[in-house]
Image (tube, rainbow, N blue to C red; front, side, top):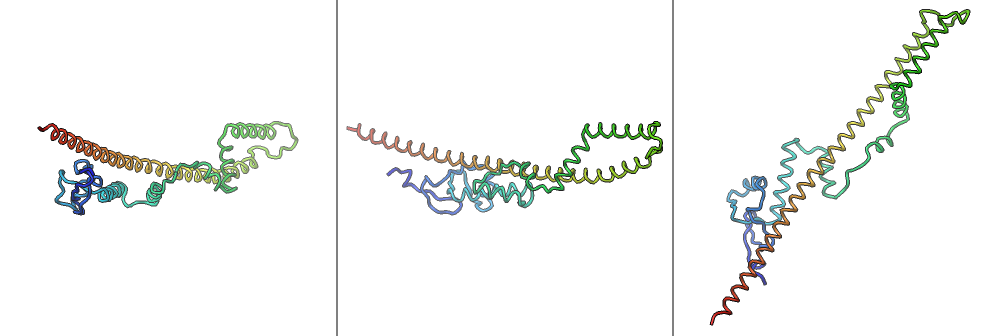
Length: 236
């Protein structure tokens, strides 16, 4: 059996003995993670080792510390992202379809009225209606105009239209604001999960480097054994 699997070293944190395959050299631990380890392990040395379980524990503490330091305590959104990251769930979804499915009839009507009221079609039709109304009641087309100058009935209709249109437009704006807030929260969850995924990939790369280092060490030990055997075999 290779010395790489039989030789044991002590973890600097838990002080337990582990084979080299279950240890990470202290020099390969990220500096930010080392800063989280030092308060619990004042005797930390760059020449020592740390077991994989303790290393993963302090990596988790570091990620939680970064999130808490930057944003305060974890919000519900961040907790949901961490849960989805743990359970490998997808956060990508069509916010527009979800928002449209929850829309009430009044909300749909308000959006359509606001959309039509802010279009050139409405403005053109409204100007044409005013022109026809004024011409009919100003020019001697009718013997008795139904709304002679100063067009009191027309002013009343315009006032009623403005009184109705303003709340409808405000309702549509409130709905748009809610939609923008949902979209912003969705983008935030996506960005946060991407950040955590990148950190997770860095951790996996560190672990891969550890395994590569262990394989290289094992190969080196085998080569040393072969060289020693060859040297002993060449002796007279």
